[in-house]
Length: 572
Image 1 (cartoon, one colour):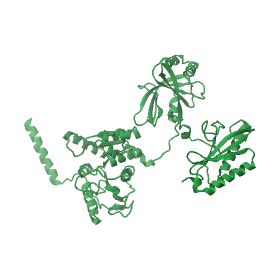
Image 2 (cartoon, rainbow, N blue to C red):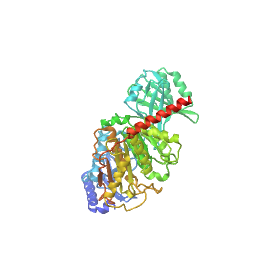
Image 3 (spheres, rainbow, N blue to C red):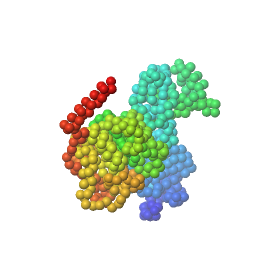
C-alpha cells in the first residue's frame, strides 16, 4: 500500500506545511507536486541562495513517515560537500540514523536551505555531524590491503631509504581483492612473518617494501611518480627494475606511520599502476571465555562428516580446537547442500577432505587427518587398524552418523581405550533429536548407555508415529532413505552436542550439565508437548570401562607366553 493513500491526512498536512513555509520565506518557491514512475510523492521547489535559484526535489519514500525523505538536485549538479556523490541526495540534519515520525518535509526543506546558504556565506563545507564507519568509507573499493599493529611492527624493521622483498597473500571474494602482508625478507630467512595467516586458498604475490625518508600524504598516482620517489630515496636501480620488469609486483611504501600500497603490472605493452586502499584492522577483542584456551591443545575425532558432523567440526574450530581426525567414506552430493556445512565447491569431493579444507578456511592453523575409508565397511585390515589407531589417539570421539554399526564401532574403541564418546541423532520431520555424553568412569559404557536410552524411550509409552530413518535410535541400519529435516533442525542438535563437547574440553572436572543425555523437541510430536521441549535422561550410575581382567585371564596369559617362548626356543 502507498503511504499517501493509507494516510491521506498526513499527506495533506505535508502539503499544507510546505505551502505555509513558502508564504513565510521568500527564499522558497514551490514549483509543483507530482508522482514519479513508482507513484512516490515528490515536491519540486527552488531555493534562492545569493540571488540564484537552485532547483531541488523532495522525494517521499514508501515507508514515510517511518523513513526519512530525500532532497535531490533537480538538474544533477554538485551542490555541497554534504552530498552523496556528484548527483546524490543532500546529507541534512534529519537522516535515517536520527529520524523520527514528527519530522516533516517542510523541516527537510529548511535544513537544505541552512546547509546551502551557510556554505555559500563561508565558502567552506558546513560542520558535519555525520561520521562514516570504516566499512562505509571503503564499500566502493575493490582493491584492499589489510594491515594490523603486527604488520606495522614488521614494516618498522626496515630502515629509512631501504627496501626488502616481501610476500603478499591475496584472496578474491564478491569481486573484492583483499591482500595482506605475509612475510618480509627472503623465504629462507625472513625478518618478519605475520602472526595471523589468512585461511583458505590464497594467491602468493611478489612484493617490494620501501621505507621512505619523508612522510607520504597519499600513494603514488602513476608510475612516473613512483619512480621519482624511489630515485629521491637513492633507489634508482630499483626504480629502473620495476619499470622494465614485465611481471606483476606489489609495492608497499611505508613512511613510518602507515603503508601506501600500489600494484604495478603490464598491460598493452605498458607498465601501469593501481592503488590499493589500505585499511587498518583494529585490535581484536576476546570473544571467547578464557577457559576456551584449553581447546587448542585438544584432539577430536569426528566420525561422519555429514550434516551433523560438518557443523560440529566447524563450531569446534571456531571455539579453538585445531587438531582433528575426520572420517567419512562418502562423497558430497548436491542434495546434501540443504543442511551440510559445505557448499557447491565441494560437490563431488569426499566429505572428509572437503571439510578439512573448510576448517582451514576458518583457521589456517588447523591440523587435520582426513580419512576416506568408511567405518565398518569392507576395507583392508591395515586400513581399519590405522583408523582405530587414529581415533584412539584423540581426546574425544564424536559419532555423528546415527548408524548403529558405527556407534558400536566407536563405542568399542571408547570403552576399550577409555575415551569419552559424544553422540547425536536428529529425528526426522524436524521433530528434534538426542545428544549424549559418555565419560569413562562417570557414565555407563556406550552399549549399556544405548540400552538404557532404548528403555527410556519405551518407558514414555508413546510410540513413534513414523517408520524409517526419522524415528529415534533403532537396532536396524537405515535403508538409505534420506532423513527429512532442514538445516535449522540439524544445526540445533549439532550445536547442543558441540556445547557438550566444549564443556568437557574446557572444564572436564566441573561440567555445567547435570545430565549426560538430553532429548530435544523442535515441534509438537511424539513425546514433545511443544517446540523446545527438552527432556533430560538419567542413565544411572556408570559401570566399568576398559577391558575387564580376572585371575583366569592372568593364568591364561602366562600359559600362552610360556608356550610361545618355548616354541621360539625350539625353532632356534
